[in-house]
Amino acid sequence: MAVVRVHNFSISLDGFGTGEGQSLEVPFGHAGERLHEWFVGTRFFRAQDGLSGGTQGADNAFAEQHNRGIGAEIMGAGKFGPPGWQDDPDWKGWWGPNPPYHTPVFVLTTRPRPSIDMDGGTTFHFLDATPAEALAQAREAAAGADVRIGGGPTVVRDFLAEGLIDYMHVAQVPIVLGRGVRLWDGLESLEQAYTIEPVSTPSGVTHLTFTARR
Ligand SMILES: NC(=O)c1ccc[n+]([C@@H]2O[C@H](COP(=O)([O-])OP(=O)(O)OC[C@H]3O[C@@H](n4cnc5c(N)ncnc54)[C@H](OP(=O)(O)O)[C@@H]3O)[C@@H](O)[C@H]2O)c1
Image 1 (cartoon, rainbow, N blue to C red):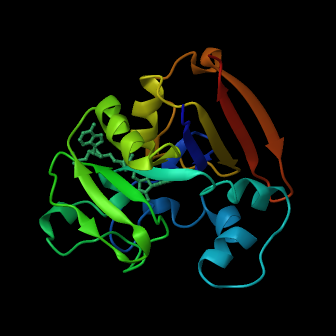
Image 2 (cartoon, rainbow, N blue to C red):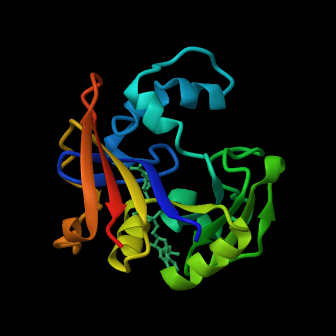
């Protein structure tokens, strides 16, 4: 059976996956770019933007797992656009005409709209569905490959709460945000369902992998 995975999901020491005050100008609110500095500095990330260079150590080794074997992504409305994007009929996500997914992407939203075909093989589908229903559609679209749960924190938390995630990589960044959207709320004793391994890197990030005990 194909695996449901989370990769490179960055949180602060106090567990926030995004800051407060998300907008078109600041997609991560008051967190700014701090949650992702380690990621955008990797060779993997820079290569996606057509840039050379970047870190090549353990941070990069985690980063480059992002797309391997992935056949579809599920994301939340809060990742797809800033608050209110549903009122803009021309909004097609943050990523320009050729988004870095190259697969079907299922956007969970209470205000669905028709699917959008983008360049490079990405199609955005919009679903008002339970996590299990969305996953069933994504699995079918992935045609045997794995499904990535792409965030934000609300959607990852909801899929964890329903026991739908087989493998998760969280990057814990050494900052304290104090406010925003937390990943861990309501997930008491989650550790009992997973084998958790930490790896710290010179960038100050602690990578945590969660492998479901099934
Ligand atoms: N830390 C990371 O690595 C990372 C990764 C990705 C994104 N982010 C950031 O996370 C933030 C977004 O996260 P978030 O937690 O605010 O939002 P989110 O998880 O992206 O989306 C939550 C929203 O999706 C819709 N939704 C969720 N489940 C649904 C369901 N079952 N059926 C229908 N609609 C559903 C609802 O929106 P509506 O009711 O409005 O439709 C809900 O408010 C952004 O700042 C983004 O940049 C961080």
